[in-house]
Length: 598
Image (cartoon, rainbow, N blue to C red; front, side, top):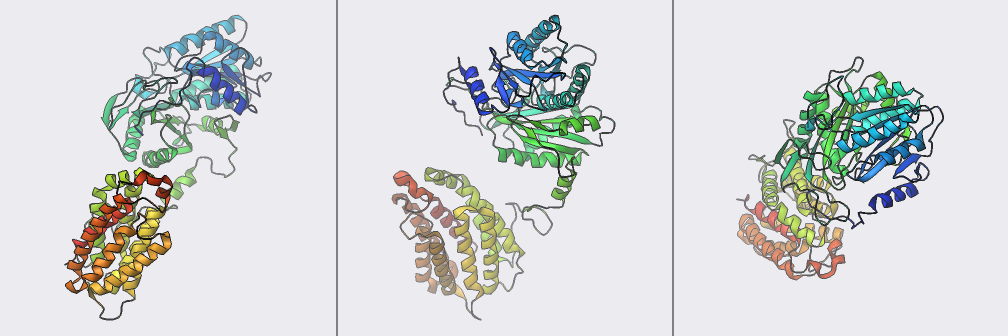
């Protein structure tokens, strides 16, 4: 999430025109261009007798602002150049195109340029006889103290507007849609703003159209807490945060800032976890998982939570969290249907509008939970198996060694693959250790007990790791275990394990369709198998360690092979000169297991 890039090489002087025209072409069923202006107006507007909600701001923030135009939300949006306010003239023309005769509500974030230009447009509309009101959004808690009630908002002193724009626009648009007059729509928009708070964080800056370098940067390995959507400085810089730590920071900075809950709110809160342009949706959902837990622990009930991109900053890597406390009226308006290019809300058909059922299902563990130990705690790398569980001990040693080499395995895999091998195998081995521990241990010298643990471990590894490597590793462990579980009474030693490894290699070769020499894990497994068989008379510990050394040498030698199987084969000679990630990880696993045998 921290790599800078220079975008698609747009022409900055025509960028605004080009993207607005493309938007109008793509969503012609919903919006059209405002004649002679940099703005879009909904196909539904103007509607006689309806208050027109006109929003706006700079380019670079899509879906804000033009993406939120449509029935049930904004009637029109005026758009400025990148990170710049639209001019008063553009706002005026856009408002004229949306005016249905019941007045115009103008709304934007609290930035000096926007305040001045929207203010000038409002004056001109009023001078021509159009009833006009303005609501400025001031939700960003990192940018200053809250506005003082009864005093005009000052962009040089009061908070700026960021992703909380969405809440204000949504409820104002719904109020206008249901037929409220201008004063009522203004009242509800102002109330939404007063009950909304946002806090954000960034991991990397953004690059503007036509620019070769980022507008601003965030130092590698750090997170900027409270940074604005144009690169404005945040509150502080901290180390790179995990998803859970980031969620804790977001919620922790918002909870003390929330105003007094409205009467009848019953703890409901609208929640918006917003990606700033480069953070992937899956990453946002990981963050939201912890956000949801923290909010519910604080006695708040997320109402129709939204996770996605709503107010971006071009390709900035980062997220923001917005909360709006709700009463019955705000909840009804926020829940109302709308249809825009970037956001659609359908009527609730599930009979549980505040989503408490979803929260209860999550708390009951309706979805798969992480593997946990006997005390109910998630399995962690620090776990050290105890005596009487030799398979768990061996797999834990493998987990530690592979995890220590996770980054290198990812680097090798990325040469001609997708770079996830280290992550996947570590994840799978964690599950394998837990599964082996869960098998009732038999006598320490009974291979059938070890076989049952290996069989369970293999199935768990394949399930947790996923992908081709997970399936092959799972087959390797499971087939080894299956042979050991069928061992005859009194069968012991290296010969038995050599038979099990022979069967495991056949299973892996059949499942993967590979042969020795095609640059796969078989190129480390086959020398291990042969050496284990050849040294069996020396006893299992000594034979295993010698075989693991052979596997390690063979894994290194795969650097001189060209991939002929799997995804890497499509890359031709790209992988030549680099060892195969699967062969290296297998050699590490076999080496680690050897250290536990005695």
